[in-house]
Length: 68
View (cartoon, rainbow, N blue to C red):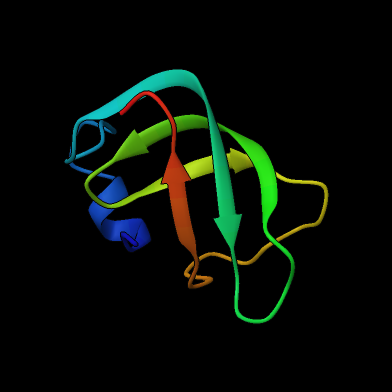
């Protein structure tokens, strides 16, 4: 995951390319049951997903993204 300084460059733009999209994904975190969710955006530094529970940045997970 990127630090805030990596997110903010001198002109306020992100340093890494990010694709906005809506894809279905199944995520697994530790021993918890897999969760079907939506991926909102994806980059080489991470992704934003819709999830019923709040997750902290840098939460390790396994994502199976359909259509990619």
